[in-house]
Amino acid sequence: MKNLADSFPASSSSKPADRTGGTAAKPLRLGLLTALVIGSMIGSGVFSLPQNMASGAGAAAVLIGWLITGAGMLMLAFVYQTLATRKSLLDNGIYAYAQASAGDFVGFNSAWGYWVSAWIGNVGYLVIVFGTLGYFFPVFGDGNTPSAVLAASIALWSMHAVILRGVRSAAVLNAITTIAKVIPLLLFIVLAALAFRSHVIAQDFWGNAKLGSVFTQVRSTMLITVWVFIGIEGANVFSARAQRREDIGRATLLGFAVVLLLLMAVSLLSLGIVSQGELASMKNPSMAGVLEKAVGSWGAVVISLGLLVSVGGALLAWTLLAAETLFTPANGGVMPKFLARSNSHGVPANALWVTNGLVQLFLIITLVSNATYQALISLATSMILIPYLFSAVYATRIAMRGDGYAPGESARTRDMLIGSAATAYCCWLLYAAGPKYLLLSALLYAPGVLLYGWAKRERGARVFKPFEFVILAALLVLAAVAGWLLATGALGF
Image (tube, rainbow, N blue to C red; front, side, top):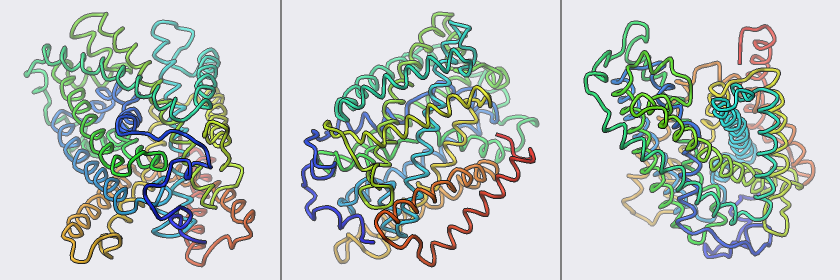
């Protein structure tokens, strides 16, 4: 199987039409790419962030958690910037970097894990949207009642119809909603800063016996902080549609900087208004409760409305990312051919139908399982850790080999250190996630093997290389263990 890079023209100035199935889709400029990154990261997570963080950590551990996450995610942002520059012919980095590093099966699993994470996250978004509306309309409950699922389904397929009209049109709409969602966050930060009381944040600053050691508290924040940063790679996923390749890295760093400042401000200022114990017991979206405490009931209404706009935009951005994540590998020969088809507007229509079909299925499943928003985002976060690790390893590998660098170029050492730091951070995240969600992730990775085999058989290619059988065996063993533990009730979701 040839490298993905060989499937495209050698020039980085190739028209976007050449990379999107022969369509005349307009390219995405820096502003739209940055909005996709910010829009992907700012969804529902920030509105529940105060309670999510306080539930397992005191103010000191929250601050330490942000410092670790900020440094780690900055390294990951630099990784995606470097790869966009050094490997400009590789489109949809989440898939392509893993495929170029370790072959088709690893590349497929990176794309598969990212895609599953995306649409499970979308289910979580829809649950919290109608859970928030349940504050005003009790019929929606916590977002998983029959009425909530029906309304969520209508919203899902309405968005589906908008995206089918064109990726760029959807990206423009996402940019508008991104601006709209940042406004209530800025309002919260200003009002929270005015209401901030230092003696409140000083209470149990280092936590208490119930929360455990500072290390335990910091570890409890990891999946939460990663969840709110998922989407940092958004510009790389849409690399084939970028007007200029250098804008991909710029969009990634700009988006990261904006979101980091917003998230840190929201979580730390909240601890200066409401004590850790009270904040931990708040109903989500907890930002609404915090602002209500600071300024009155109108504050809760403003935040609730802001969440609806924010999640709507994030849902749109992540549906675009999910469809693109199936579309590019299908063109590369590791997904079935029908997923590589696009409509007259340049939209990967079949990939979009499959993605939203599964979102719809899981919405129905929430009626039976009563899956909570927190459980859904934890699983979605765990699924995406492996693709992030693959990207970090690949960046380290090309820097060590000098692949894409001029002889003697000093940037190699810097990029190698950055890649190594990002790799270490991703390994730490896998440890922090714990065995429960890693086993559940294996259970969701395993069915992808059937799709990969289908794609290979379609093209008459050998399905697995010798070393890939080792990966396959490990994956199936972990999935079998997870299935057995679920069946016996030892592993709950």
